[in-house]
Image (cartoon, rainbow, N blue to C red; front, side):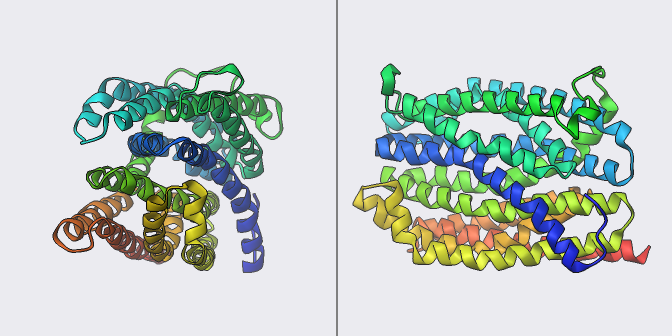
Length: 449
C-alpha cells in the first residue's frame, strides 16, 4: 500500500485491494455454499439437517472468528506508522488466541449440540443430520481459526491477492471431498449431509497448511519471520487484540445470528419451509460477499491512513467504499428479483420448495441496499478502531428492532413466515442508518481536533 493523492488513485487502490478480497470471500463461502447445494441434490431431509446445523455453526464461528479480524486494523496501523517490528508479535499472539477460541467452540458444540437441537421440534432424520454435520465441521475449527488470523495479517500488508489464491483452492478441494463423502463415490462411505461436514473440515486443514507455507517462505511475509522465535503468551497484546476484536466479533455475531435464529424459528413451519428459506439465505449470502469485501477493504485502507495521520484520506476512503457498495447493490437486487425462479431451481427439483423459495428471494432483493450501506460503514469504523459503540448499534438494530418486528409479523399477522423477512429488512435498514450517523460523528470529531 502507498499514499494516494487523488480520488481517482484512491478508487484504483480501493478496487485493487477489494477485488482479491471479494474473490477470497466467495471462495471461502463456496465451501458452505457447496455443502448446501450438493446436499440439496442428495435429499430434502439432509438439506434441512445441514441448514439447521449451519444455523448453529455459522454465527458462532463467524462471531468468534470476527475477534481475529482485529489483527487487520492493528497491523494496518502499525505499517502506516512504520512500526514493522511490532507486527510479528501481533500475529503470533493472534494465533495463540485463535487456537484458544477454536477449543472453546469445539467444547461448546461437543457438549451443547444435543441440548440445543432437543429444544426444537425436528423430525428425527433432520436432527440426526444436523448433529452429525456440526460435529464433523468442528473437527476443522483449529485450522479455520488459525487461517483467519493469518489471513488478517496477509490482508493488512495489502497482499490481498495472496489470500485470494489460497482461498481459491478451497472450493475445488471441498467439492471433491463432498463428492466422495456425501454420495459415497470411489468406495467412500455414503454419509449424506454429514459427509459435507467432514469434507469441509479436511478442506480447512489443507488451506491452513498452504497459508503457513506461503507466509514462511514467500515475500513480503518471510522478512517478518513470524514462525521463528515464538514469543510467550502476552496478556497485554492479547488484551489489545481482544478489546478491538470482541466488539467486532459481537457485532458480526449480532448480524449473522439473526439470520440463523430466523431459520430456527422457521422450523415450526416444516421441512419444506426450512429448505426454501435456506435456499434464499444461501444465495443471498453469496451476493453479500461483495459489500463484505468492500467493508474489509475499507478497514485496511482507513486503518493505514489513520496510522499515518492522514485523516482526510481516511474519510475519502470511507465514503468511496460506501458509494461503491451501493452501486453494486442495484445489480445484486436485479439478479435476485429477475432470476429468482432459475436460482431456486438450481438448488432443488421439489416444486413445493422452489415455489416458496422464489417468494423468499423477492424479500431478499429488498434488503440489498441496506446491506450495501451498513457493511462498508462498519468496515470504515473498524479502521478507526471505533468498535464499542458500533456493536451496541448492531445489537439494537438486529435484536431490538429486526427480530421482534419479524416475530410479531410472523405470528400475529397474515404474513406468516414472510414476516421474518420483513423483520430482517427492518433490522438491516436501522443498522445502515445508525452506523452511518456514527461514522459522520467520528469524522467530525477528528476534524474538530
